[in-house]
Amino acid sequence: MKDLYLVSLQSLGVSFQVLIYSVERVNLANPAGPPPVTVSPRRPLERWLNNPAWIDGGLNPPHFYITLAEINAALVAAGRPAQAQSQPSANQLPAPTGFGNKQLKCTNKCNRYTFCCRTSIFLTFVTGRLTSVTMHFDEIVPGATRMSKAKVKKIAETKTDCIDFDNMSRVQVVQRILEFHGLKDKYEASPVRGPEFKLWYSQSPGGKIGAPTISTDHDYDVLIAALRRKPASCAVGISFDLDNISAFRVRAKRALALEEEDLMGPGGELLHGDKVPRLDQYNETQKLHGTFTLRIKEEHTCQQHLGENGSIGHCYVTSVGRHIGLNMRRLSMWAAACAAGEATKYHPPNIAEFDGAQNGSTTSTRPRGRGGPSSKFVAAPSPSDAAMSVITAFFEAQAKASTARRATSPIERIVLPAASEQSRAKRIVAFPLPTPAAELQRFLEDFRRLKGIDVLSSCAALATAAIRPGLLTYLSLTRLMELTGLLEGQALLMQVFGREWSASLEHQRTVDVFN
Image (tube, rainbow, N blue to C red; front, side):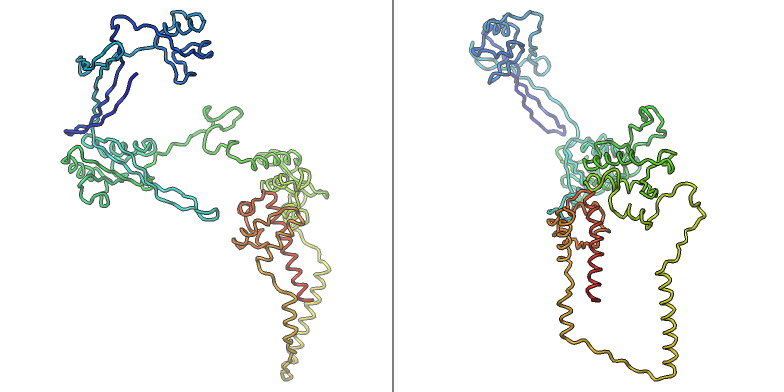
């Protein structure tokens, strides 16, 4: 058995550590020959008997075997054959000596049942002054609630070690400071100026609060000259801000050519770098949408409209032969609708991205050779346009006649009958404008009834953010999914339904007012 003790001493300007070992214990009853072989009264475990080792860890407490003779004695006692002598015995370290070759004598009274302890002392010298280095950095702390914003908090981390200021330059001290916090390979000090740090010691001018800032070699030499006059037991403190030394960060050089064998994998695929997409960078929802995107692209290929670099393009062809180009935006919306169960890979969802391209409100992809770049579409006059022209001419004629009549005749004031208080009160009671909270509640109830998606629990969150049904179209999908907890396809469906519901509500209000 060996015990380890650590004692730290500091005196006469030298710091050193004393390691004291309590070394092996020697049986003095038979110093000439090996100790007698003893067999443990506890039977070894079956696992140890099948595979003998120096420790039987299955017993409590574990049993240790010092020599091969003890292992063989335990095997024979258990009815197993002894092992061959080729297996080496456990190494027994010799007792370390004291200072030089001097052996410390034992003062204990040893007999057959006691052990003698021989103790040795070794000195390990550590030069330098005990220094505490504090690093200040910003850390983002989440808010107290889920809806509150994150806050930036200043954090301090302190490490302690010895620094030999007498034999180290400013650059070496800076590298030593960065080494305390594991930043030696990430930052590099300038031989002219920076990075800046503050240094103070016991009874220094200004103390810790007014510690001077060291940025050049002159600042360092002046302060270290005053520090040398202090005893070695004088503790030193250093602090620096990680945000102020960002200009000294070591930046790795970018690869000049991506065609090198160590960067390019088989088939010309990039294997190393910052922009290499990896599967573990995407969540389960994005992986599911990617699967549906591949299925949609396999189903809707187009030879008339090629993709990038002459590859096969992708278009959705309507029943009348109209081509709708499948860009990344339309593919992502279609895949999200498929994941939500609102569409299949054969037909796109009923949203503005596809419905507008079919009814002509948005631009669609035209086949090659049909309607060149110089052609201009001119809409044919409709009956409504002709009617508007007639009405406009009629009102212009009436306006001219009224102007001529006012010039020759005195102005007559037309008095309109004022609405009675009873009719005005009846109109206000019959058609009250709902509050935003009531309008949002009604919208969520209709969305659950017509679309089968229940998001009534999100009414409070939407009301807190002042979101009305007519504003859902202008809200990003990420923000809407965060407020409601819906999938991407369900959030798209909610936006479409909100636009239709708001238009229907405004139309109903207009009809009710004029009726």
